[in-house]
Image (cartoon, rainbow, N blue to C red; front, side, top):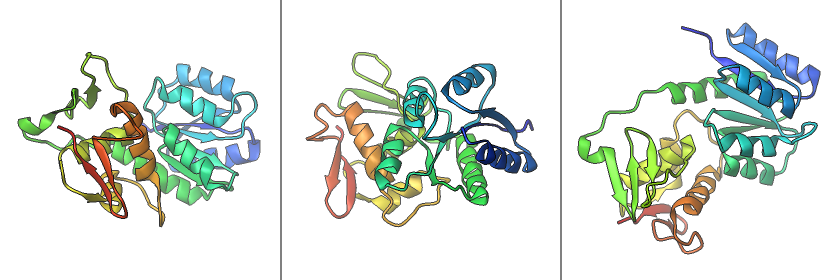
Length: 233
């Protein structure tokens, strides 16, 4: 099997080589980029299986690059940042990061999270009965086999991997209150921290994409102190 290829975008040479060397010892192929221009160039030249992206970069910052990348690609992204504020982690997840690590990065932890995410991405779709394969609600069509969401006007509604997994899980369990821990479990291959807000972040992104009024949601409804319930019809 061909080795997975990791693109590391990091302007600090020491950190870049430390991460690259650790990946290479573990059998990964590594592509290096020091700034936004190099990142964009390498993405065009190579088939990349995962991006490890620093936030503070010369030129475009990492969050801007992540936002632009998510507009056209679902490649897994781990954001690494020296910033310690929770808001940076939340913003990165809102934009579409698959994971977030604080710097200095623990290389062993980086490797474990990389393996988990790549394993989840490579997992074949679980077979479902035909009646569960396509779900229709509120003028939207969720095709679980094709992993697509289509609006009433026929336009594709782009979902990140995490958004698709969470919406699919909820839509299969209508009018059933699901706790955050249950929803975290459906996002497989991740190591969660106490009070993890990832579910809330993804729900917020989904509401912006599928609700008529994201401030007064009718499809993904909050059950305060418990979790969420899918009320699509």
